[in-house]
Image 1 (cartoon, rainbow, N blue to C red):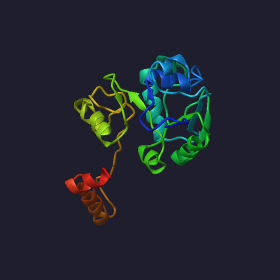
Image 2: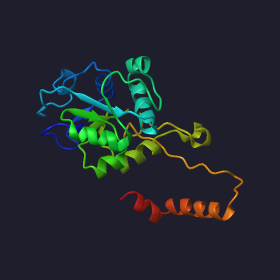
Image 3: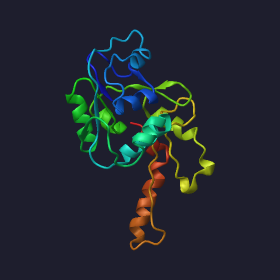
Image 4: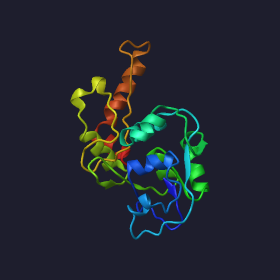
Length: 212
């Protein structure tokens, strides 16, 4: 997500390498040649870049830093991946809501939030180049493309990182979510109700509701 005057959602194009260099503090202005070269014809401001990241540990940060580690050897060596990392630059916000608020309040900022927070806060998103060199937009279709294009045959217990997947149309910073339940339950009726809900969630009705 970015806060750039005059830039509309889906107009700005970024690559993983450029994002990593921004977060490393190597690219500090929006008119840097690496950004301008990706966005010919776009009126980028002559403005300093303010990086916004999570101040608390989170799965969102894990997915974000896992992606950056895959697309940038420099990031992998200097920072690495984890639910919490030592950020080279930027200001930290608590929770997705904290990051969203900082990005909305700071002109020239860039940050990462879960998709739902971006939608709820009407934030300006950027297109990001995926493994297939397409500039894709975050959304249900591109999340599904990342999952469909992944090789689940080698995923133990369905654990698989969906970042930087090779599938066409895939959003490169996608993460999967798991529901784990004990085989033996202290409250069997409650467990049955939960499983019934999960079954419904994967039904046609549930899938339609999830997409709205």
